Length: 114
Image (cartoon, rainbow, N blue to C red):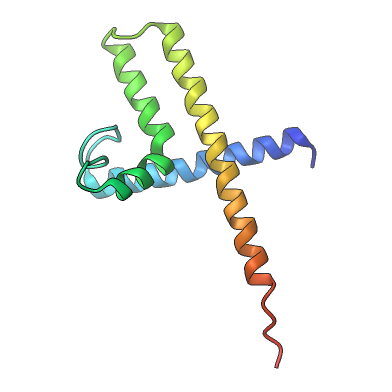
């Protein structure tokens, strides 16, 4: 695979992970995904960090679309937010692929022969 295919694969991995995490969080809480309670809480910093890392691009996109509909941001600002969410999903995909690669190497390096 070339650079373009690797980049697209990483983006799709990040987008899929973001969508799965965001949908699961919305189903469990019954509320729209956003940077508010119950997803982010100062009392649960690690949980909030994990939620933001995994479902952050969707949270960011939802917040940007709400702000655009209410007239708080312009169309160029909305496009900028979309680009930021896209890069965020790509970065999430790269991190997840790296974690999977390291885990695969660690699991593959163990000798289970008797």
